[in-house]
Image (cartoon, rainbow, N blue to C red; front, side, top):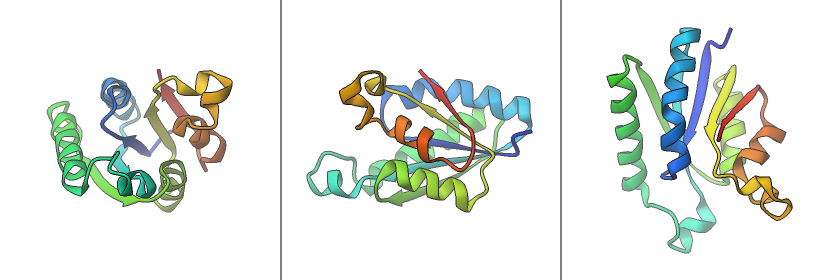
Length: 132
């Protein structure tokens, strides 16, 4: 079924809320979990995004949380445009599924253009499960 599952995370509540569902999917599929966090270059330059150390801590905390659920996870950090980095990375690792949280901003016409999850759905090389 889904052998390699990619879980893109950021510091949003949506990512934290999706983690438990990701654990359920990984366990059900007996899959390999890869956690990715992307530092958006433009926003980082403006000081709106966490620095590299904060992302490292975020990834470490996620790895520990999944370990507590009995799941070994790999972590990866990248810089760039989040949706494109997520889709490119999913392609690189031959991900079978991307599971990600959603803030709900893509539910409006104006928000759809800004929504990372909406862009990932449209660009991903594999199925995408969005957890509201």
